[in-house]
Length: 337
Ligand SMILES: NC(=O)c1ccc[n+]([C@@H]2O[C@H](COP(=O)([O-])OP(=O)(O)OC[C@H]3O[C@@H](n4cnc5c(N)ncnc54)[C@H](OP(=O)(O)O)[C@@H]3O)[C@@H](O)[C@H]2O)c1
Image (cartoon, rainbow, N blue to C red):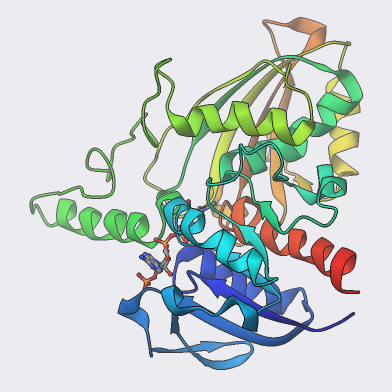
């Protein structure tokens, strides 16, 4: 496969940092890796598995010098710069929500819909909560049909980037030292609390984070009729989002059948042995590629057509960097091999 000139825009952030690691771990065909961030980081040296790299100013990026760029800054930055990149012939894999809802731009989880990438110049990476839920949900959708889906989330502070993790760490220290606890990134102090509010409230009283799960699941599965709702909650953990998922299926479903399907699904590790207290947790899902699925049980409301389970996935990996690199692998094969 041809080796590519790759750029990471937002390389000093939580997603950017993981992108560098995942590219190295998966042996992505790289001729030259360049790292970009804000003017604050310009000139700083970063140790990487590809050697020491000097951070460049993202606003000065000359996209003619790149074949492929990962955007991991913000939606606003992506909107302002994507056209510049594609006009210069550089393919963009975008981690923000800027293009996810544009009809002609593919929104991709490669295990589910890699076929929609084709020769697109911009490919959108899904919301982290959606990506983690979609891996097991798609198996249920395919094998049993989905009549209703209700998701409740427990989301780590790193979902809000480096600043979210720093706020949890610093303010927890303040709390324990009896000092004033402040909040800047989150709407309320996060230590020893949880906040049922992620992203902006919408007209229907859901938050945007919650509606992303509805909008994006439908787009990725290619089925606008899927009835899915979500309550998204920020909790004081560092990394890996957890989600409780309740489904009513079209056809009868059994725990044994589903467990077997999950065990055979790439990207899932079944953690379901209640006799030995084995279930998904951020503690075990952090820094893992696979999404943990467990607590699989017949739902007592929907009976034989209902199932309930718990998932936990590293949202900076499967919910961002890993999925983005998997998309790039398809792009490299489609366009550059
Ligand atoms: N964190 C997650 O779990 C997650 C999951 C899925 C998608 N995403 C999306 O991925 C993107 C990055 O998120 P993150 O969590 O990695 O954020 P982050 O940790 O806050 O990092 C932000 C990155 O963007 C750079 N940056 C900020 N303002 C900039 C500007 N004006 N010009 C150029 N560079 C600028 C920062 O550089 P400096 O260090 O120089 O400030 C840093 O490299 C966002 O769109 C986010 O919504 C995040």
